[in-house]
Length: 66
Image (cartoon, rainbow, N blue to C red; front, side, top):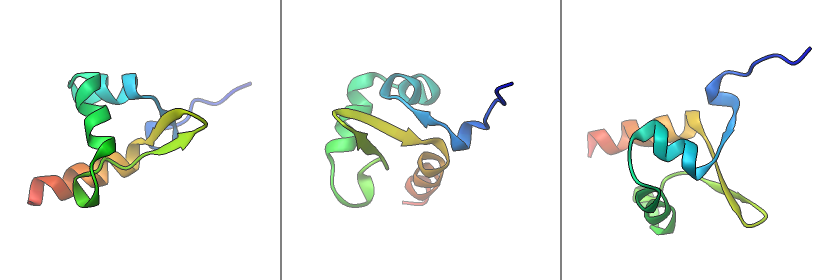
């Protein structure tokens, strides 16, 4: 029996991040190309971008304080 993981532990796609943040795909892609603190935390699995929701939440909190 498969257990459902918490969202913070899941690997999310660009589409899932965009839907969760209610922004266009292009906004997410643009934030992955930035450097420094403005870059949304991500990593590549082959050619695909993936995100840890907990890292994105931390990044959002940091962005709110700027």
